[in-house]
Length: 84
Image (tube, rainbow, N blue to C red):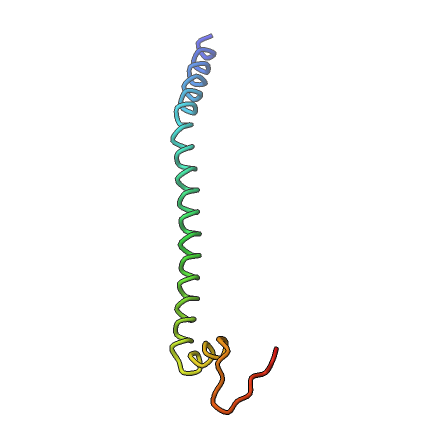
């Protein structure tokens, strides 16, 4: 009989501990999700920054500047534009 009470007390203590630890685990999971989302956004922003840096470097060269002007329809002196 004494063993039965001990088992019951231990079971109630374990149940109470599990119940009380429920909220911290929920907070932990939410914070982990927030961190993962922030890391994904940071990685995307870094990729975009790299793309923009490469694009800026391209257009700072003489060939890049010429490409911009040609895209606007400008041609060199003596050239005949090709109709597209």
